[in-house]
Amino acid sequence: DNLEPLKRLAPQHTKVGPSYTGSFRSVDVRHAKELTYEEFVHCYMEPNRPVLIQGAMEGWRARKEWVHEDGSPNISALEHVVGDTMVCVTDTRQQQDGCGEVKEMSLAEYLAWWRARHESQGGRGQEHSQQQQQQQQQEEEKQSLTSQGGCKRAEYRPHYYLKDWHFCSVAPPEYRAYEVPCYFRSDWLNAYYDALGEAQKQKTQEQEASTSRGTSTADYRFVYLGPAGSWTPLHSDVLRSYSWSANVAGVKRWLLLEPEHTFLLYDRHYMRLAP
Figure 1 (cartoon, rainbow, N blue to C red):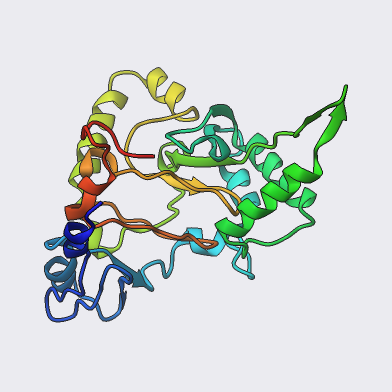
Figure 2 (figure 1 turned 120 degrees about the vertical axis):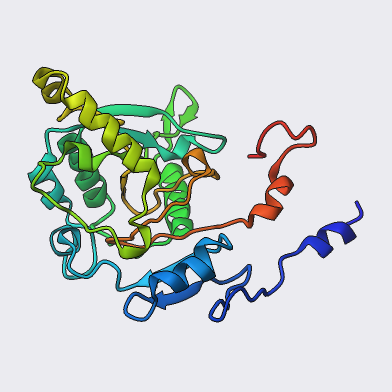
């Protein structure tokens, strides 16, 4: 019950490099027009510090076609490009301790579910926070209680989230949704899988055709797509790699843990992450 050791471990305001002003409660916000590659490497990549870079998506096709004027996602644009693609969606209401139930369906079927859910909520926009969404879901469960033989049963409504979707592998080759910002072009992980993919394509044209429209695991270029309230449990990125993420539409909240405090999340046997 002695909390003194934990108090001493509490993260403090730290200065790393000439422009790092982040702390455990905030992350540096920089603009792509004034952040050089050298400064990014020195102040953020080398010390393993997060940074939010504004203006890095200017000129992206995804920003033009995947977003409505009000900032909400234009899911019809994605359906037009790859609507027949098979995807795996996760029920995020069942993933309190790990991954929830995964279901395979076409992208068009998933977007149809999304539209129906949106209409059932009265067309409310994407501005609701995750906490508001959870409160709303709890209220809906209370209202959906029905009496059957003296027992009450709550109508279960899943909340599907399309994550880890290999969009680049299923989109037409000429469809360039984005350009990699200069800070992230040294992509060793995906370079390996690109070379591996080219070797596989050279084997048979039939193999290329059979994998081009189905569920693919060809690389680590992912698209995440879901209605308000979608979320991912506590995790570390694949192979402990450095990752970058661009928020094309909507709002996403991140909770980050400094690497030196990871041990605080394990159980007393240091065998698994605490839920």
